[in-house]
Amino acid sequence: MAVPARKTSRERKLKRRGHIKLAKPNLSACPNCGELRMPHRVCPSCGYYDGKQIVKQDN
Image (cartoon, rainbow, N blue to C red; front, side, top):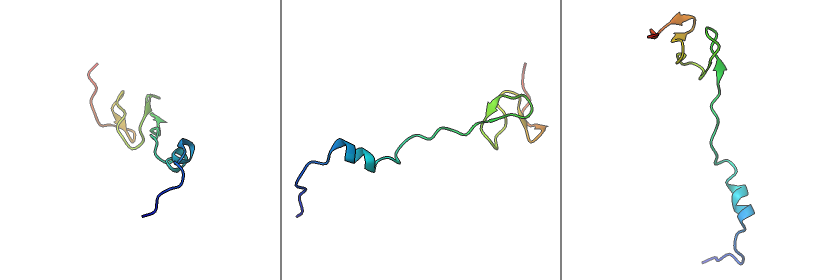
């Protein structure tokens, strides 16, 4: 059985795991109210999507 001659350093180990991280969500401005929202989803603040009101807001 092969046994490594030296302990793998922390730096080398972390270089291998460079792709393991959290991704920040892409946010775009709502064309109706200007609030930041996730693309291809109804705006949580005004309820509009693609220029049409989808969700009625209780204000």
